[in-house]
Amino acid sequence: MKNKYPTYGFFLVLLMVFSSCKNEADYHTITDKIEAEQKPYHGDLTSEELLTGTELIKITEGEFTFLIPERKGQVKSFACIECHSKPLQQMGNGKETKAHWDIKINHASVASMNCATCHNPENMNNFNSLTGKDIDFNLSHKLCAQCHSSQFEDWKGGAHGKKVAGWAPPRASMTCVNCHNPHSPSFEPRWPVQFNTQKVIERNEGLEH
Ligand code: HEC
Ligand code: HEC
Ligand code: HEC
Ligand code: HEC
Image (cartoon, rainbow, N blue to C red; front, side, top):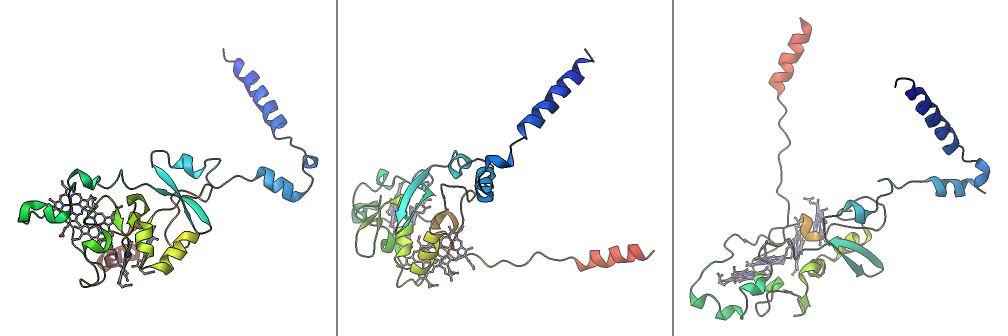
């Protein structure tokens, strides 16, 4: 049994020698060689493969075409029409039921922003553009783009926000609502992590002895 291993080892070495013996002459130029041998950052995995399990949709905005995560499967109370089967005024029978008590608007000023700025009381299943057009729940970036055009322009090009996976094509980017809560979009300020000076003094004293 024991003496089998050297034989396997020998063949393994032979295999390695032969497989790594790619001739310089196989490539016409150094650029050809780089092109042929380069590997994307995440090995050979495409963004799509890295994102198996995340449902993506393809969008085209201006000259850019890329993938973003779909939202309808993630938004808890979608589809809205399960309850919003009739216009809002006819719902709740006059009583205030506060179905969405957990949603508080902390976005711009109360005067300029209310539910109907973004949601259509006649058709909750779609967003409402400022000119009264329907916007699909998967395309909420179009809603934000109406007022935040500079961030939207940067996002399209990949400067604002984040790639979902790597730089390996196809490009997949997080969408605005993956990072910003549309109802309260700014990030809470955070205190820096406390630095325990007492522990440092103790440690230094320990070193002196
Ligand atoms: C479980 C039932 C239910 C679902 C699902 C639901 N809603 Fe509602 N919603 C209500 C009821 C009932 C009211 C009306 C009275 C109230 O405020 O409780 C309401 C009111 C609203 C209002 C008006 C609130 C106000 O203060 O004027 C908005 C906007 C709204 N819903 C948006 C949505 C959207 C968008 C969805 C889907 C993403 C959704 N709702 C899904 C039950 C629901
Ligand atoms: C600035 C635009 C904007 C305003 C104003 C706004 N919403 Fe929304 N709302 C959104 C977007 C965008 C989503 C979908 C977010 C996502 O994809 O996660 C959403 C989602 C929702 C949902 C589904 C949330 C869930 O997780 O199930 C409800 C319910 C809702 N909004 C109700 C309201 C109510 C009620 C108001 C007013 C008090 C309001 N919204 C005001 C943009 C807005
Ligand atoms: C109707 C116009 C309008 C729409 C639609 C809108 N916003 Fe805003 N948003 C504003 C205004 C006005 C402010 C407050 C002024 C400012 O800081 O630019 C603001 C503030 C913000 C801020 C905070 C800026 C800060 O300084 O902290 C973020 C983040 C933001 N919005 C993201 C979004 C996202 C994401 C969407 C889409 C879901 C969206 N907005 C939709 C008008 C809008
Ligand atoms: C990967 C997460 C991410 C995505 C996606 C994203 N943002 Fe942001 N956004 C941020 C961060 C982080 C900041 C900086 C917040 C701060 O400085 O407090 C920011 C800041 C902002 C601000 C405040 C002004 C500024 O530039 O600092 C606005 C408005 C805004 N984003 C809108 C958007 C819109 C609209 C989209 C989609 C087109 C979007 N964001 C997509 C993370 C994101």
